[in-house]
Image 1: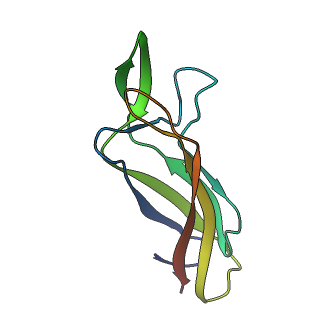
Image 2: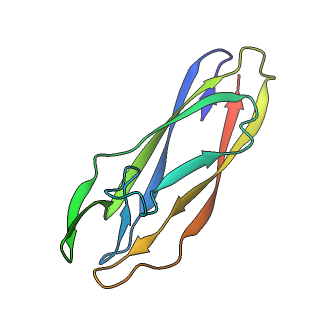
Length: 121
């Protein structure tokens, strides 16, 4: 991702969900369900970090209709390059957290480190 000072930049985060599994959407149907979430740590020269999630689907599990993601999805992240950002490379870091489930069970929640390289011009 390449951007100029004080400009908006965008990147995509691909998420691959194994066939037969789902993850709860970023807006799960019940408060006890663990959502798909992105949390940012060090952004370096970037600001904002607004994540846009795709439209979830509904999965029927038992008697419940759940808001989920399945298959391959993309999260869109919009940043702004800081006005006084130094020219050169950097990395924005964060975590993607989720809980994978199938039609019989949910598995322990997991976190994946995200490192998004960028270049300020």
